Image (cartoon, rainbow, N blue to C red; front, top):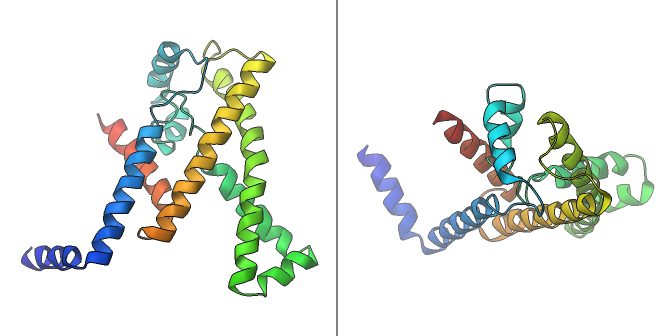
Length: 200
């Protein structure tokens, strides 16, 4: 125990490392705040009652992985899935498209270009996934959670796209200025939040 306390003291005596830890904690706190901002036009009371009923069903694991983002149908309900899907697509296309394959062989400059293309691809994927999420939630929870007229669906999808891009930005900031990989940290925070929430 004394060794652990000594190690923690050594970490906080290192100013650079201490600043990185504080920055990461602040970014994770911002991420958790976004969970409580709902998508426009959602019937929160109906949603919360239905998600509570769903915690013991197969949907419960899905709710847990979103770390509470589904309970209020928040801006970040689709999470980092569009970014992760875009990364996988770019990796697969790198083996098929010669130009992308050349970029992978150009070192750091090429990787930065691929990362930029991944961000661009994430936006339309997030919008499509946002539309799908509206219909999926209504279907899984028996409807009446959010209207499915065209304007409401498009607005909800746009809001979730903004939320997903915000998460992507927070993840990259953590990678650049904080500790560990930002995307991994956000996914870990979601799982921990979901587990602790289901424990009560």
